[in-house]
Amino acid sequence: MKKYTVNELPEKSARARLINVPVSIKDSVNVCNFLQGKNLKEAEEYLEAVIRKEKAIPYRRYLGSISHRPGMGPGRYPVKVSKYVLELLKNVEANAEHQNLDTDRLIIYSLLVKKGETIKKHMPRAYGRATPFYKERVHFEIIVKEVE
Image (tube, rainbow, N blue to C red; front, side):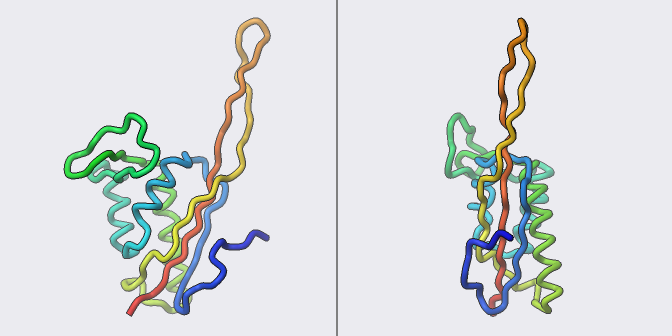
């Protein structure tokens, strides 16, 4: 069984994981870096706005040819990543309710992205050749804590 990357958990905390999610590692890193330290409810509302393409996620890494958005610097609307991260946030909220934590006072303590397995596939080409292409997977891990 795999372990969480954070060894010492805060006293009032909840955690959740998603494993082998078929999304881009670069988009995932930018979304998770943006949500780090935010209130859980605010993060869920922001991701729902990203899915509707009303608000953009500001990008801080992997900035090759990324356009600027109104009111911020470079940013994008990573809808696929946002759907999976929103699922993760709802999962950790349910875990916190099970542990009798106040869900209105939850802060995202740790939101990590790890590179998962890479699946190698082949695309047939002309004259009996084949071109390899790779499907990347991502692991998400979240820990929330209740603040006073």
